[in-house]
Length: 362
Image (cartoon, rainbow, N blue to C red):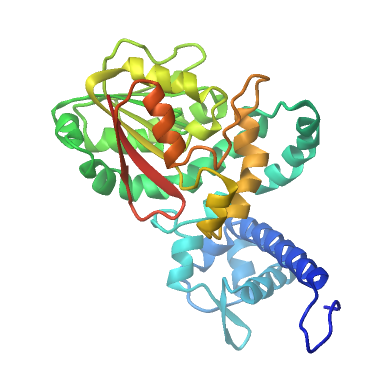
């Protein structure tokens, strides 16, 4: 890359240009991960040992030349290993991240809505810059609901019930006896269904305004075979403000809401005096300076998702509060919950680089 004296290293212009090309490479790699996930290439390589491009193409009835080029790129990106002799290997560790959806480390699902996000959605964002009004989650398309579900599901399936719930004071005992539970912003319902399976005596209610998410929640409920969960369209049947819930969860959704202050007040009205509210939201600071000091390598991605998804959703009405992806960190969460009448606020660390967790009580 041109742009500087050899002895002095690259100029600032060269450094920025290199950064642009590196990020462009990341975008290309993400597209290739999407292809591998969407077309079952990773799953076909899982536990199959070293394969030639012909063997992999034959397994999936695909064109060998296209499969070979994809494999070469995956080796170059470091996702797939190349033992030699024109054979390619998906290691067990890579399979946990890219192929095995039951793995707690599975990440490939998080790219499932990238084509829609970087295509139709991105092309609509310039208008939001002009008007100030963003897109609702349903306007992001059905793949947004699927992508969020697949991104968050591994933590819900592996950590929520065995790790997080026991750390909350008195919650498990209530769930075992039979508690009344609400999940506001339940999405596709994966978290609520995990709780329902573990605690069949409890009565659980999920609330969301996304029709795509609620459709997925209904399908997930049928597949889980549970009868103690009910999903509600919150626009038609909002969470009741009768102080009847023992336990309420909001999992990665407060920052997406157009009216988070209203939602927090609704939670205050819905929860019992001795109830517990469990929040999961993005681990971030209160300002750009704090976020930069945290040196989170995911920070550029989080701001990008904010523009395309989260802040867009939180500004999907003209009077939206616009928190965005990195707008509901610990300080903001404590402030907003306190203003709504909650007096107890405890932070938890469940070893998740993406999220922070808060236990809130009246």
